[in-house]
Structures are given as C-alpha cells and as structure tokens.
Length: 446
Image (cartoon, rainbow, N blue to C red):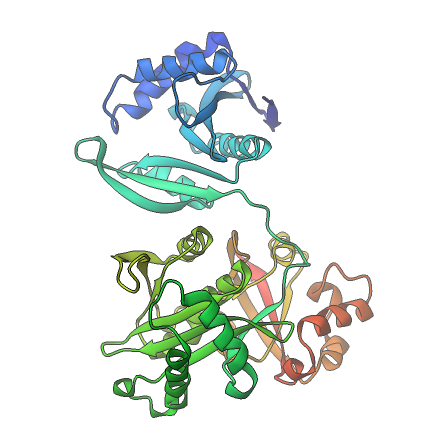
C-alpha cells in the first residue's frame, strides 16, 4: 500500500491508532442514511485492513484496504477500498470530516488515491453506492466521471433509495486511435459492406434479420425523400474508417416523433461510440427522442450510459427464443445550446490545458450546424468537457487554411507545418477535404 501527498494533504494507510477516528466518522456520516451497527461495520473492515487486508469472510473480496487523509497532520477523511476477485474495486465508504469539507479538496484527493490504488491492483472498474438523499455525495461522484447504473428501492434503510454508480478505469487511446467518420449512406458505395455487417451482428439475436430484411431497409432509404412516417422511410448513416464500413445505423421516424434505431451495429467499440454520439445531432430535426432495441454486450451498455441513454424495457424472447433484447432511449433537445463533438484524448487534453485553441473539421452537415457563441461538449469516450465556440472560419483547402492559421494551434504534436498538413490529410483525404475546411476557434470555460 502506498502513501501520497498533494500540497499539505497526505493520504496514508490506516494505522492501529486510527480506529476511534474511523468509527466516529462512519457513525456520524452513515446513520442518517443507513440502518445497522456502524461501529461493528467499522471494526470489521478496519481489523481486516490492519491484519494485512485479507478478507476471510467475503465471497468476492480478495482484499480490503483503508486509507486516511491528513491535513497538517490531523486526520480529515477516510476511504476504504475493496479489491474484488472479478477485477473490480468498490469504495465503501469515502467520508470527509465535516470540518474539512468543501475547502481543501480532501474528497478529490482521497478518490484519486483510491482510483490509482485500484489501477495498481489491476482493476478495470471502480464502483460505489450512495444514498439518494445524499445530494452532495452523489454530485461529487458524478462530477468525477461516475455513472448512475440503477436505483435500489428501500435498500439499506426503509424510505431511502440507494443509487448505484461506477466508473471505468481503462486507459484511453492516443493519437493512434482510429479516425472514424459518420456519413450519410451511399447505396452504391456502402450497400455490400453494410449488408454484411448487419447480418453478421444481428442474425443470431433477431430472428427474421436476413437478406430480405436488409433489402427492405434499403428500400425504405429510397423512400426517404417522402418525409411521410406512414411510408416507414429510413435514414441511414454509416461509420467509415479508412474507406471501410465499420458501423451502420438505420433510423425510422415514427408517429408522435420518436425515432427507432434499427439496426445500430458496429465492428468495434470506437465505431459504436461514434454513431451514438453523432446521431444525436444528425437526427434532431426528425423527432424528440431516439430509441433502440439491442441485445447488448457490456461495452455497449457502458457506452450508452456514458452518453445519457436510459434503459426503458427488457424483452426476453421478444426477437428470438434464446435472446434478451433491451430498449434504450435518449431524449433529444432540438436546438440545444450545447453541441457534441468527438475528439481524441490527446487533443482534448491540449485544449483543456490551453495549448490548442483551433479544432479543424471538414464540412459534414453536423459541422455546418455549428455557430459562434455555442457551447461545445468535447467527448473522448471516457472523458468530456465543455468549451465555447469563439468563431468559425471556412477555407477551400488545408493549404489555404495553413496560409492564415497557426499550425501549432491546430496540431500541437506536429514539429512542422508539413507534418501538420500530413496528419490532417491522413484523417481527411481529398474527397473529404473538398467538403470545405472548417476552423473552429474555441475557448475554455472557467
């Protein structure tokens, strides 16, 4: 176990003489929200930690570890981390003494220490539960990137619901992550690859998804210009990477203006996430919500939760006797002042640190919708942050753009304008460059 310090805050493993502080803190913090003997709870987890962390009674627990935060040598908070045999870690609990809350960042320091410690144990995910009335604690975890995965009614105390939260600890890809574009379906270019992807991803879980089903999807696409929901017209987008189709989404606007996405398939997590993010802006003119029927893998559920989708229903045997299909939904805010944009993590970090003020895109419809003054939510996959669009300038080519704009602000990792040019051309080949080069000047929000 490690010790860490941030400023005058030190986080260290709990010692034998810390028990009274731990027990009193747990009793005061937990009693309003939880029934049970909190001193006995404190004694059990504290003694396990002091004895080396070996849990002799937990079925899934492989270790329990407690850390104390000190400010100027005085104990100010605790975090207890449970290492799970399934490669996850649980925070149970994290508490800051009332006298130190909201001033010194002790809660943030404890949480970071817990996450770093969990990573050192090989955990891929960290989770916790928070009493629903404990609004400050809930808000704290949400700001730190945790996602609510569900609510347990009357769980640890009658009349008090418990929120379940988790956060992925996976490292994000860097500059070498795939360059994926979500573009309108072109039947001549995309049909064969889209058909193969749909059939390979859906046939096992959805009876009736065969070549004739795909034929009907494409026929609906040809009726798109009618704009009449009674014709069941389809709007199709594909995710492309290096000229290959890596994702397909078919949208059917319905009476009452919900939009059903079926299919929503992808050959990778990155392609699925690209569709989930971009479809919100691309389809906002067609309805007030999106919904999809999926037999999802765990990474798809994690992606939907990251982007604020909600589980709306479960259909056991609804599409095939052995499959369980879920309905997920997302409300759309037409004309929302906050737009979304996918971005690679290193570029996101450069923007948020102030080293990058210009973001370059080509003239897809979603980019043409952007306006100066709008707020832009940058999405990396596991991290997001909001910036303001200061101005937008449009050029015919990258050559014209670099004659006017600072290449260092566009591609901060490049060592020359020639290298910056080559990086952009790998992302946007000739046919995409011809859509127009949009330079988005952005500023961070304080």
